Length: 157
Image (cartoon, rainbow, N blue to C red; front, side, top):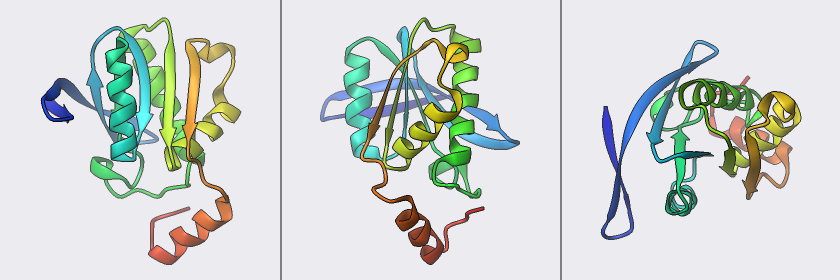
């Protein structure tokens, strides 16, 4: 299907949406097709600004809703640990479908934590297309986020 995202007052982009599966769980994703690839996650305003800048520079943007966020539905969250595996599944999908020469990664808040876990788990020769990762405003203390998640009733492992 098609989805239109609005950036600012008079700018909009039509993108293709898709559903991916990671660990038998659906991930809602949206593709902006241009030529290079940048992956981003969550936090609408910061994400929209980063995506707009990437689009202006000729990057293709793949944006997705993480576990227990947006259209991906209710699913246990691990504050970035298992979500890093979801990100790798998305990277594998993008590499298979679009064959990008370079991939950039961007994450805000839990997305930044996800990228930090991803860098520890998956960075290396098998992901040589990944040329940069921007981790904006990650958690200051993982234990604080975990306690906050427990107190708010968020699904967790």
